[in-house]
Length: 280
Ligand SMILES: NC(=O)c1ccc[n+]([C@@H]2O[C@H](COP(=O)([O-])OP(=O)(O)OC[C@H]3O[C@@H](n4cnc5c(N)ncnc54)[C@H](OP(=O)(O)O)[C@@H]3O)[C@@H](O)[C@H]2O)c1
Image (tube, rainbow, N blue to C red; front, side):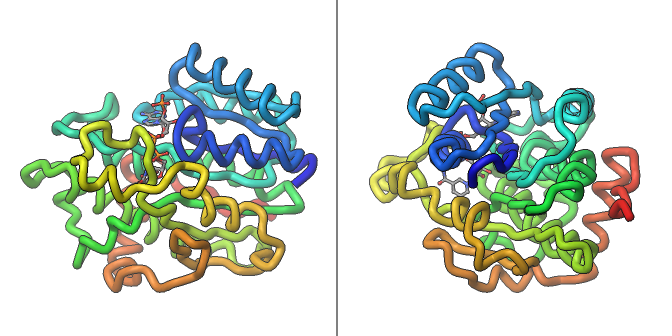
């Protein structure tokens, strides 16, 4: 991965931080993304010293804010001609109903609208690279959803941490599938994954029996690392991978084309702009 420029959202902790470390050790040029400057700087220092790789940059943005995502994209465009891999990873399990500053249910905003907006803003930089990979971190929790309920995404139903989170993760997969079709003749690949049940800060209130089953973050990175690095996946796009890095089917709900289209239009409406056409 020497010299490849890799942006990982949510790389100040958990799976994203571990991926950043492993990729830095392989010689990649890493762009850490965080929302807290102090934590982000500490992460940059940690990765530089552990990997012995000085090529570690950072950007800041709270992913619940469209304005901050846009400013982050401007900073990246000022600094970089291209990005080889965009990893959409930042995510949260949110315990109480809240709206984002833009007025959307917070888990939908952070876990999905941020992926959609970040990808739309950075697609031109990925397209300019040789490597051209977009990786989307979803979750096996999406299997809980039998059919995407847009009222859940809109925060119109009674808030439930797991149901709302699972819906946002279905949205990730649907986005990944539709985007891969749009980009199929461009060389840009889009794949999504479940990292496994991993011992991270995603939900500090996880019940003990779940914590007991969770794997350490060093083992919870297999699918992310495969999608970023495996040369065999150069032309593979529009697929879902499970925690051991194998390609599997996602839930039937995620393949619903009408819902994929409806979700796409909804996201465009919410971010207030059309997803860009692939640069010719
Ligand atoms: N852990 C699991 O068992 C598991 C299972 C399936 C899927 N996943 C997915 O894996 C991804 C990574 O999660 P993780 O388990 O590594 O969790 P984590 O340890 O809590 O890390 C989440 C990362 O996202 C960042 N983040 C959260 N909310 C943000 C916001 N509003 N703005 C900017 N950054 C924000 C966090 O920043 P801070 O450092 O500032 O908090 C952190 O860097 C998520 O998409 C999650 O849904 C995890």
